[in-house]
Length: 355
Image 1 (cartoon, rainbow, N blue to C red):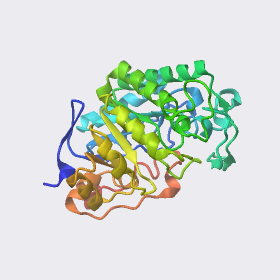
Image 2 (cartoon, one colour; image 1 turned 120 degrees about the horizontal axis):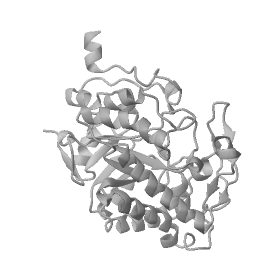
Image 3 (cartoon, rainbow, N blue to C red; image 1 turned 30 degrees about the vertical axis):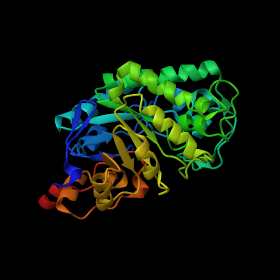
Image 4 (tube, helix red, strand yellow; image 1 turned 90 degrees about the horizontal axis):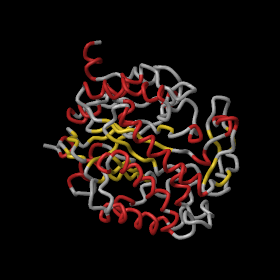
């Protein structure tokens, strides 16, 4: 049998296969970060994967960087996720929530009272962010105070607790894609002179304190973390990426996490660099097809493989892999549009056969 379809024990949770759905922003929530009812169908249809990881979800009002992204910091938001986890579990699936804070990638338009975005320092990202009114330039953030850094650590812990209340099997910390956690890791962006800036050890402190706080809140075996070293996105600048991620991954061997998820979006050999350093469960993501996934699993380069657009466009991706069936192509024009078009209308093999 293909290793893709072998089970995997994830911190006491049994995954029925090693096909993981990537966290993907879909922008279907309302302006209060509450998910509509039809989101349950979207995730339940993909429950044949070994593990589903949700779209990145805001840990606080100041975390929001994109239109119509969900939150997990109010009771209404928590309650809106409960039908999602219930529907996935009824289909025999497992689901983790990815949580994040966008930091300097946010725009004042999306923040309370048009607030200035926050970051490790006052270094603006180069580039633009999407809004329904068109693309807008990133703005200069203000540095978080040391007290605010510690409060943000607590926001992540609270979000993890709320996710468990909503019925999730675990929580993934988004430490990738140039968002707040990664902003602290980036030497050209983190100009702090307190204990959260300077050396690699200090720049990693925010990340490690969040993981410790989340682990204390819900148990380390229910916590995962995602990295995307040197990803060409959101003005990521990591001149010392090799040293930073080698240090972090080796530190994570002490944490007892559910998994480490690495997206090598630039095909820069990060799996080959980091997998040998990590003794726990390793998820490899970005730029995978079935054959490459099989090779990674067979050679021990990964314990599970993460699929993004392929899972978005193919709700029954594991079945299609098993049958070597043709894959639907994703419709990029509906990735972030409201409503069910381009969300709940991708054909499955079963629906196609009955049409």
